[in-house]
Length: 111
Image (cartoon, rainbow, N blue to C red; front, top):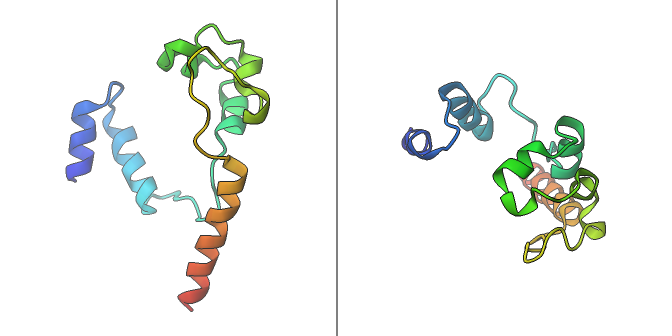
């Protein structure tokens, strides 16, 4: 409850249903909680739901002039996105596999 209240006070786009639903989803207690193996890919999600990069361009003004095709390119093909814009801090594909292995190991230990 403390986290939910804090975020609601500080979110730029705070909306009670989205905020509370997001906390429930993150905790795995929502009606449609994602299974552990569903790890979202930011590039495929952007391509599917925001192919023009409108959200990215709004909230990351340093990327506003970057063509949508460049925003959607795999990270290894998009550098540099914009002058001074940082490189990714991890390789999504590598970290996805590492995380799945960790969850599977934990699941196996629980039996």
